[in-house]
Image (cartoon, rainbow, N blue to C red; front, side, top):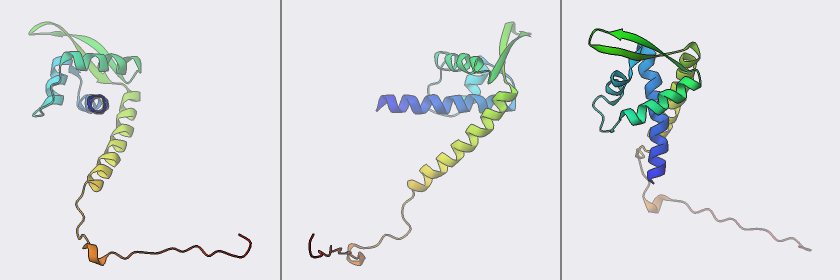
Length: 130
């Protein structure tokens, strides 16, 4: 089960990163804070940076060093035009999937009692020579 949870988180985190960068450029720690927010997920640099590296290789994001008033330069990440398109497509698909899961998990409005179920009996007719 742990592997399923890991795979689910990886896909969701990738979309969350793209979504966060959809609004503005961010440096690594800022990105972690923006994604984790109030969630109980333990998102660390060891989780985020490999995803950022992969997204960069796929040319969905770009990185640039920016001088900081508060210390050393910071590496800021932003979406490329290809990344913007990917985000829009993935977000639309995520919304469809989330809606499907929510619908499937919905309690039926009216469940029929056992007595109301109708049993359909199917008989096969045997013809001569069969």
